[in-house]
Image (tube, rainbow, N blue to C red; front, side):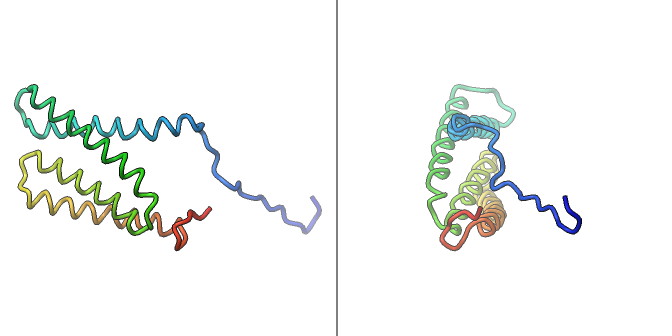
Length: 144
């Protein structure tokens, strides 16, 4: 290198993709399924308290897991198509409702579960909106 010249290193255009397309496709379904099963178990455990595991408790857990999986997939499919405000609101409303439902299953009142859900939703909304606001332009296109 000659004296007086600066070497400029160009950053890579994108971060490297460690996983292939097949892994990403599997994760789009696999992550909501695993989260749904954990959520269903958690809801069933909250509902039964310290009591025994019954058939109705198992059914409740699996129905809750199925509902969570379907809603999670719907939010993951629908939300990215919306503007950043609605995108943030959709995902944060799902998170707030999920937490409120879990809290309500532990025996808390509907009012306290609603308040907790709204607080969680507000926190998630701020985080999601900041993330999308700093990484998208006004039309919703990702900034690279």
